[in-house]
Every structure is written in C-alpha cells, then in structure tokens.
Image (cartoon, rainbow, N blue to C red; front, side, top):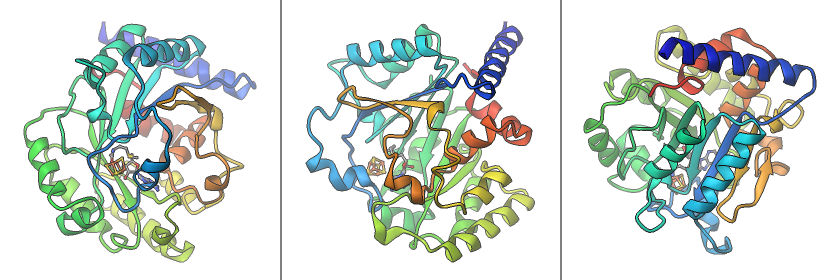
Length: 308
Ligand SMILES: C[S@@+](CC[C@H](N)C(=O)[O-])C[C@H]1O[C@@H](n2cnc3c(N)ncnc32)[C@H](O)[C@@H]1O
Ligand code: SF4
C-alpha cells in the first residue's frame, strides 16, 4: 500500500512537471493563511507589524476553508500548507488545526504541512512541521519574545515526529550565528534539518546588504559540506543571491488563500517584494520546475510524499 501510494504520487508529480514544461501551468501547492492572529509580535514579521491595519476577518471559517481546499484540489493542487499568523491558534468553535489537516487528507491532498512558532501545541498528524528558529536562545528570544526558545524546545521534547524541520530568517541580529544555529539542529533529536532564508521586506531595517548575504551563503555552503543538516539545495542558495527574483519565480506553482477568502494565484506579496525576495522555498520551486534533479530529490522526501 505504501509503495503503491508513493508510485501514484510520484507519477502525479511527474505529469505535473511535464505539463508545466509544455505550458499547462497549474498550482501544485495550496498555501492557506488561515489566520493572521498570533500570540507573538516578532520584530521581522510584516503581518505582526500591520495586524491593526488588516481588515477583519482575521481568520477563515472551517466551512470556507474546506470549500477552498476542495476547489484548489479540483484545480490540481496536491500539497496543502497552513500558514499564519500562528496556525496552531486557529479555531472555529470546537474546530482546530487538526480538523483542517484531517479534512485536507480526506479531500485527497498527498501531503499537509504547517509552520509554527512552536509555543503552542503540535499537531503531529501533519506530514511536515516547520518550526521557526531564528538563532540560539538569546537572539531567538530577542527577535521573537522572551521565553520562546525554551518553550519551543520544551514542547518539542514532548513530541515524536519524523519530519520536523526548522525555518530560519537571517537578519542583522543573527547573521553571525548561522553555525551556532545549525549546531543546535545537528544536536537536536527532534528537528532534522534547517532551511535558511533571507528576509523579504518589510521591515527595511532588517535587510542585509548583498555583500553580507554573500558571506552568509558561503558559510551555509561550507556547513553543508561539513555535514550539517542544511535543507537548502546548493543551487537554491546561489539563487538566493539573485535578489530580484521576479523573472524566475514560478508564481503559478502555489495558490494562496487568505483569511478573507481572497485567492492569489502566486505569492500574495507579488510586486515590489519580488525585487528583494528572500524566500528559499521559491528558489527550490523554481529549480524543480526547471527539472533540477538534485533539488527534486532533496525536496521530494520531505515535502512531497505522504509520511502518514
Ligand atoms: C509568518 S510566519 C507564520 C508561522 C508562525 N507564526 C511562525 O512564526 O513560524 C512563517 C515564517 O515566515 C517568517 N517570516 C516572518 N516575516 C518574514 C519576512 N519579512 N521575511 C521572511 N520571512 C519572514 C517567520 O520567521 C516564519 O518562519
Ligand atoms: S510567530 Fe510567526 S506570525 Fe507570529 S509574529 Fe512571529 S513570525 Fe509573525
């Protein structure tokens, strides 16, 4: 059953890739920002920064989310990611993120995932869990909130999941702490890799210069060679230095649904943000659509195939 399912999913991805190359471009990923609400106010977070100006509703309802999951699936999406705000704080009456994960699986999505600050509960039914880690305790807490590092680590101690990885955003506060952060992951029995990103503005104050980014990328490549569990592919790391990614961004690969149910076929930040995009995942998507086999192989096991 497991092998057959993997073959079926791989065939679907292969057909999607081929159709894309032939010009039939459809989203494979449905990214749902289910709530803007969050218990933290991280220094670099554009959502936290503008939360008071964002019109209501700040969360999608369960019924609307399921309807949007279904329509996106019918258009071809098979990978479902929940984002926020803090997705583990999403609620609709008695419903929580677990209900959305279950609904996504029942609809037929191959893989579900979400990103979390790790201070609340973990929903282990998700195939992939991305936890934000912006450095060792002192710096992580300065960027996020005092006590969040210890809370994240204590919560992780309680869980057993094969596919938890860390998401780091590099900014002036932590640019000199890449090795130390990668060491935390290497030593961790709970987190099995780290994906490193640069900031996408706003805020401007947290942007690195291109020269600073170059040094960071060189260091990450060296760490990869030394065997640190860095998830960024080497090619994607080099493309992180192409700050204006508007030409290469495969906008069509992911749909986005926002809490007010507005739909974006491509990144909702599309526009000015593309000129200084720091998201590593965008480089990986782009390399996949350009049939980079090393990227496909390094990403597939973590983000594309069911683990549940
Ligand atoms: C918006 S958060 C939502 C999930 C959850 N609240 C968390 O912090 O993990 C998703 C990821 O985006 C990152 N992020 C926030 N602001 C960013 C920015 N301006 N540029 C790049 N990444 C950013 C966060 O650090 C986090 O890893
Ligand atoms: S925890 Fe996530 S959503 Fe909340 S403020 Fe921090 S980065 Fe933004």
